[in-house]
Image: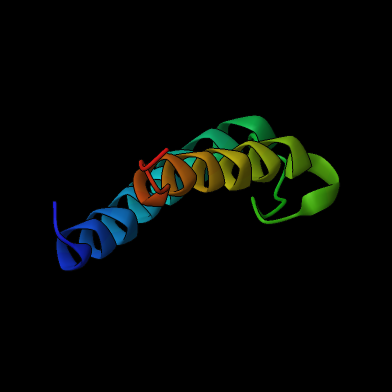
Length: 66
């Protein structure tokens, strides 16, 4: 893959991970009337989202030369 294709893939995968995280956070909060961006209740979802995006982009953009 060239650099432009990697950038586009990194953007779309991050967006897909974000929507999956929002879905999981909504399920974690439930119907208590709280928003799903409340870090007090859903910090573990957003931590997992950040770690997933960082790991994916690290593996995508790492230098494969030894």
